[in-house]
Image (cartoon, rainbow, N blue to C red):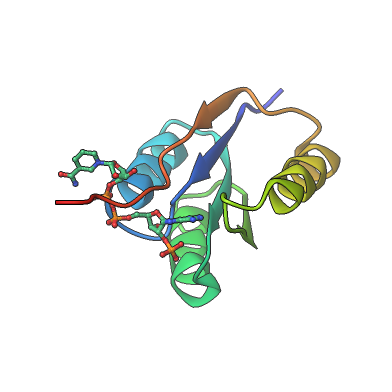
Length: 92
Ligand SMILES: NC(=O)c1ccc[n+]([C@@H]2O[C@H](COP(=O)([O-])OP(=O)(O)OC[C@H]3O[C@@H](n4cnc5c(N)ncnc54)[C@H](OP(=O)(O)O)[C@@H]3O)[C@@H](O)[C@H]2O)c1
């Protein structure tokens, strides 16, 4: 069975790079962030590497949206093998 990784904050930076890394290793990818336009571009980059991507706009500060995300990811792929809980902001 193909393995699946769920990556929060996947629309840029470390999250995007991690998504491309897992895609190269053959994982299907669930991508999430708030900005769906940026997320869609990363999803297309992932798909161009030959794996499946599910992109869903989610604010991880909203528990009901996170529950919805996980429910939809499980419906779509049947399993989530790895969570990369990366979304966040850096306060200086
Ligand atoms: N870069 C560093 O030097 C550094 C150092 C220490 C720790 N970190 C941590 O490592 C992680 C990645 O850093 P980065 O530099 O790659 O950050 P980044 O380029 O700013 O990317 C952050 C990602 O998180 C998403 N995001 C932010 N708030 C969110 C929310 N409430 N719900 C869902 N998605 C959210 C952003 O997309 P949207 O805005 O579209 O939601 C974006 O995809 C962050 O948690 C950061 O705090 C980074």
